[in-house]
Amino acid sequence: MSFSSEEHKFIKKIKEVYGDEKKTYYVFCSGGLDSLSLVHFLKNVQCLFSYSLQVVYVHHGCSEKHKEQTQYRNEALDFLKQECRNLEIDFCAIKSKTYLESEEECREFRLQEIAKVLKPSLNAEANTNLKSRVFLGHHKDDYFETLVLRLIRGTGPLGFANPFSKDIDRPFLDLFEKSELENYQKQQNFKVLIDPSNQKNDYLRNWLRNSWLKDLSLQSHGLKPFKESIVKISEHLSQIESDENKILFFDQNNEGHFDYAQYCSLNQVQKKSIITNALHMLKKSGYTMGHVLEVLKLLEQNKKEINFKVSGIEWTKTPTKVCFRLDLKL
Image 1 (tube, helix red, strand yellow):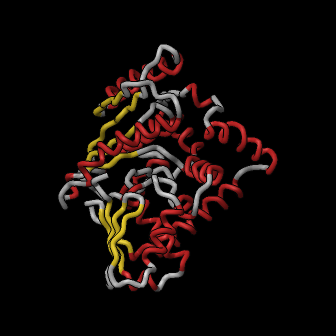
Image 2: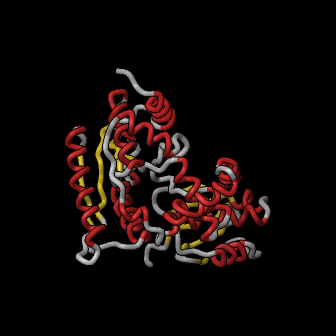
Image 3: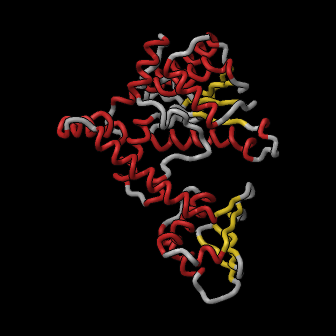
């Protein structure tokens, strides 16, 4: 069987990152270019690997008040159902009981459903063949746009170094730009849907993509230098964060620890990074720099042992290590 040049790049990525694993790959697909391209890539190269494939469509609810968007969501459901039937791929749909309107509401609902899929995998036994993966179609342009949005909304080094959750797989992220996926779609000749809400600049990401970046490109004769600078800064911060956090250890029971002597050898900025990552790994959100500074201050108390609670995390310092765990009573 022959593969396109894009598929050869994709095959190399799958082999390097995942190997030949007997897992179920769940692709959360909207029917748009990015996610449907991922479905076609995984289907076309599946013969080389042992994974099984399933497409998941998340329906964000219906409303008489929002007829255009409701119609699109229903059409996307029918379209993907038929597309998966044609491709002989397992398909399932998840529908919100209420109409979700804002970008944040839709994203939170999707993340909740993704967490449900991942939960059995995270709690599975050591046999990796029992686990599954969730795939999303984010590409290089999405990565760049997300970094710019983080800067606009305000973020620290951790948020800029790791804009995406590591629990979810995004194989296009360092592989393809949107233009390359558009070329692939033309080669493979498959239909994609265009969400009408993508043209509405009410959403910050849409305004950034449809207006601000286009204007900037015209004024600066292209976006390439800007894109490269933003991505390089993110990659550099990610490497620093990775090196600093080699002393951090986590298990699957909402617990973690780090060596106290190694922690004491770090400077204040590095200590903040360790504490921020500990909070982030357990809570993901709901903590502030004030919480980080409070933990930092308490750990510096001249006591051999200390127990305290900050932002729903229980901390224990001993002469040799610092342990922290999520307070499940909250």
